[in-house]
Image (spheres, helix red, strand yellow):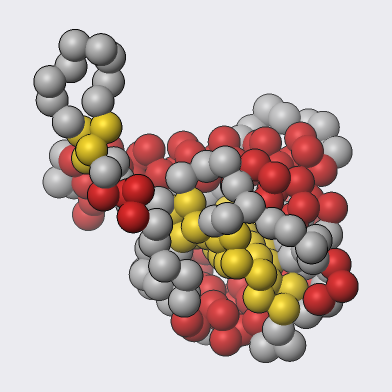
Length: 196
């Protein structure tokens, strides 16, 4: 289990004359499945964001020798177990080299009801296929809006790995900001699931 860095508890002052300390929200716990080109581009950005990352892939040789301090490499033949062990409120990113593995992970993630975000790389066609299969496996159709696919903020059409990574990180930060806002206003139960 990745430990949350202690900087999450540190007060922060805004401006030179501010006398009020603001408590930072805890870092996001990101579970990234896939060590391909987009995964590598994402790690370069996530290493600078307020998060801890479990970077998961079956292919140990794809991981770099060095990663940012907030990243833990998980080279494992049982990625499904990582889904089960992730803490409540985790942010799941699925972008493996294998559609069958993507589906297996998607099904496992959707069986949880306590994640903050679940995004999967892919086309709208992939989403439709996965939705049908998830319903066939017993996932409630009304919950499918909790799966974000394609991922990334809308309007970025460049498919280069760094561009996709920027779009995904922007989306994670948007989701985090919305959740903080809802928590601050005590209306987390009023959040509406909007289909992608």
